[in-house]
Image (cartoon, rainbow, N blue to C red; front, top):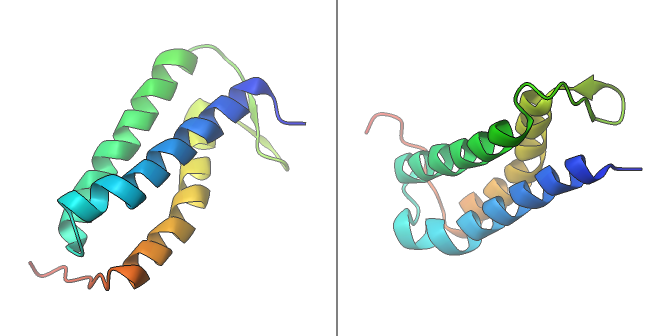
Length: 102
């Protein structure tokens, strides 16, 4: 069973990722990989700061099914697991081209 602390982080990440990729990124970044990356750094930093403010130094152990982790690793892993499929969908839908030479 997932504890309330885990659910609150999963919910926060889900809301931030969906709001970003369905509303904010299309308007601000379109199909520009560099702009998407900057927006993503901002949104993931926002999530990490919020979670850190609540759980930093608390000693709370979060369950990741097979092992326990502190708030940082739990949030990072949950963010990646939720974001990667949404990002792949967004990149295909908006024909995002990764041009790192810009």
